[in-house]
Image 1 (spheres, helix red, strand yellow):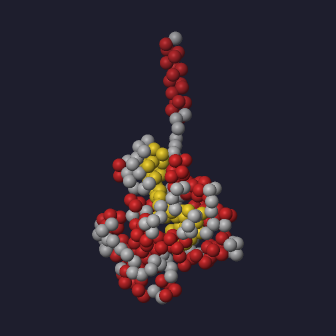
Image 2 (cartoon, rainbow, N blue to C red):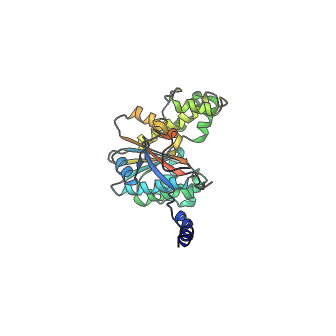
Length: 284
């Protein structure tokens, strides 16, 4: 009898193991406490501007961005904005939202990212369906590249029209911010002092167009690479500099092998940390 019970237990063991939960993600607070989605939704709904930091090739992040946007939109109209659209592409984006051109026309007239159709089109189409503004916030890449090579002085050569697509000059810049100093360290010093200036030109321009597009009484949700808002720096530093009176929330994305506990290096990275299983297949 004991032998039969042992065989039965051994035969059930693989089934029991296979039946364990396999969560793809877990939300944490800045202090490392597990948080349910509903609690995060309630918290960010009390703010004016939300920065959702993503990994550009992470499907879970893009899915949660869409879900959060839909849920927040049930309480009232929103304003959306994204790093993935450069400011000089606002006109074709507006034309698409107004139904004046189709998706093919947008692809022709705007510089869309290679993963636009899968990762960002659902957000743009939601804005179109709900008649919400969608703001192109990023500095045109060619201008950021100029700053990376030549420093801030490169922007002085832009025409008056081109300057309307960037943050007002001169752009404030603090090279001692840990995020910018860290970029130089990551590059092993090879990027030079102008490399983080290019990052700052993006952060400042995104903050500028977020505030320009913000409408009192409507939440603004901005989608950007996590590094642009991690550790309460980057875009948020510029936002708080100009409008300290507004309420902000930050969400970031990280990957870990274990979803049970937030690793120490990710603590205080944002108000809410989306931890995705590191085995999740990247989209590109």
